[in-house]
Every structure is written in C-alpha cells, then in structure tokens.
Image 1 (cartoon, rainbow, N blue to C red):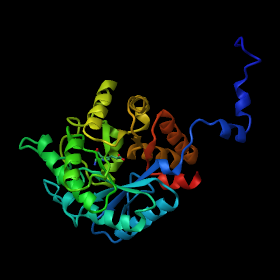
Image 2 (image 1 turned 60 degrees about the horizontal axis):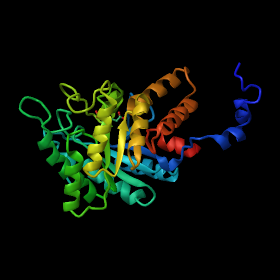
Image 3 (image 1 turned 45 degrees about the vertical axis):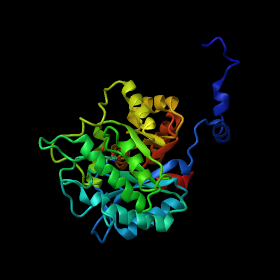
Length: 327
Ligand code: PBG
C-alpha cells in the first residue's frame, strides 16, 4: 500500500462518465481523420475488397458518394488511390490527365472540394505491371533517380486535376524535393506535400495490395521501405531530410505497431504529424470482431485514441467516416 493512501485515490477522477469525459486528455475529432478511398477504372459496380470487409474499390458514382458521406460526417480529408484498367512498366496511367486517379480527383473535388481536403497518394505501384513503386533497372532494382522524374510528373498531373495536397509514398530518396520543385515550376506553389517520411517495409500492408492490386510480381520493397528493426534515428533522419526538402507535414506508417516512432517524430518536428492505420491493422480488428472475439466499436475507438495519444495530429483510417459520425 502506498504511503499516500488513503489521501491519494486516483479512482476519484474515474467515478462517472462525466468525470472521465471532463478529464480525458485525448480527444478524437472528425477533422483529424483522413479516409483512404480506392477508385477503380472500368467497373460498373463497387467491388468489395475481400480482406477488408466494408472497404470497396469504387466506381465513379460510388466514389463521389463515399466522399460526400465523409464530408457530411466532418472528416478532415480523403486520400485517393487509383487502380487503372491497363498497367505498364512505367506506370503511364499515373500521370495521364485522363487516368483513373485524375478523373477521380476531379470528380471528388467537384463533389466535396470545399468541405474537406482532397489529396492523392503519389506513387507508381498501383500503375506498374510489375507492382513496384518505381522504374526498374534491367536487373530489377527500383531506379531511384529515374523514378523521381515520374513522381514529379505524377504530382503535377494530380495538382492539375485539383488535388489539394499530394502524398508521396514510394520512399525514394529525394522524392519530396523533386516533387516540390516540379509543383512550383508548374505554378502549384500552394499545393502542400504530406510526406510518407517514415514508412516501414511492413507485413501489415497485405490487404491493401488486394485493394490497390499492387502486390509486387517479384521481390519486395525492403530496399526502399525501412526495416522494422532499424534504429529509431533512421526514422528521425528520414523526417529531417523530408522537411529540408520542403515537406509540409510528415507521416509515420503503419501506426499501432510504431507508436514509439510517432511519439519521437512528434517531439522532433514543428509540422503536423500524420499516422496511417494501415490495411492490416484494419483487417485484424474486423476479423477478430467478426469472430466475436473482441468488441468491434470499442476496439476501433481504443486503437485511434492510442494513435492520437502517441502524438499523431492526423490519422489515416479506413474507419474515418464511421468513427466521425460517432464523435
Ligand atoms: C504505396 C502505398 C501502400 C500503402 C499506401 N500507399 C502500399 C505499399 O507501400 O506497399 C499501404 C496502405 C495500407 O496498407 O493500408 N502506394
């Protein structure tokens, strides 16, 4: 028994819902949440993603509807991913003004562009036939500098289509600087960059690769994404480099397995910190809940509170609309 007992009784501040609500240090707000959405070319019905119950590859119509619902719930932003009908080695559809992602951006901006922030994931893996995030060398490595030229062109195409923020996720060295320079040269000085600065080579992306149809046809992403066992300083270095290159906000991904990293990054920087609660985090909770093993709503809420408490200002989550409605 502590020497302070019975004077000190922490239970006093937990005694009622009103008391707990008043003293709670972590509050989720709908505007903190960002909803990832998948636009698929050439489909007439939304396609459910088998490994992510409740998540769809959208048609043009269902995408507008999902964005509208997010806006109505007060969600802060949506981030769009495109799944093209035709893929090739250089991901030509990614910067085609009529490519699936550019069409989706125009549709969503015209639907909700004032009510929330419409952003695009800036990468190549959804668009290349080999499923890698860049241009390959003859030996099958991702060619960093050749890929930068592609990212620059993609970001400009996304901005021209109305994207209000771009989010480079490919973990190429120098990607933020290359994109900033290209956006500025094209007159898009006011389009901010949300950098996926700290992105681990994570098994938790598994279900996303169904949703975005972007599983690498050979090899993996461990020559560019970070080693989960890598030192924390490596994450901080990535963040510092991205800020020096002009990142306006930085991201840590995945979220729940890397709460310590979120906290360290939050302490380090003076820009907004986002965390991506990725597909595998979503799938685990949905699967356990579907089996009756956990309470779905409470677990979702607790997961988001934990990410926020760790230091994330923004959370990308597939539950954004659903959770925003409850807040
Ligand atoms: C790359 C990208 C990925 C995710 C977001 N952007 C996949 C990857 O890096 O392999 C994963 C998101 C998730 O798992 O929910 N364009």
